[in-house]
Image (tube, rainbow, N blue to C red; front, top):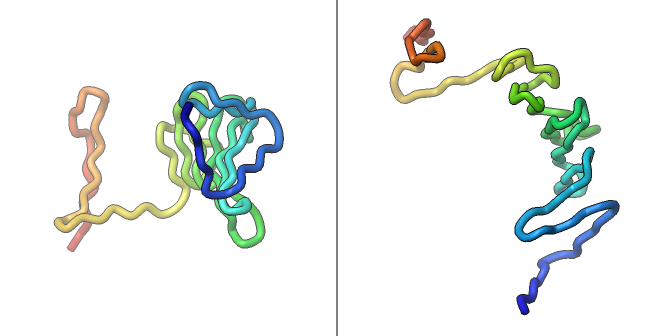
Length: 116
């Protein structure tokens, strides 16, 4: 028989099950870290979605959101495209930073290159 030793206390408030190597939370479940400094929540905004939250000093706010259809939002909980970023984006490279846009058949349709 295997024995599990925990390095700290475990607190469970609500439904939780472990099946094999899977941790099962109920619909609307959440995982909290560091006394609520970070959280992943299922179904906070819509069914089958995931919200990744961090503490701002006064409250938890969603920083990244994944819709059930696969759209990912950074800085928004309503992404309208596959990747929807609301805010600044940094592209860094040892050479000239370049952002390339390709269609679904991998043809280059646009390129944005930083000026020196």
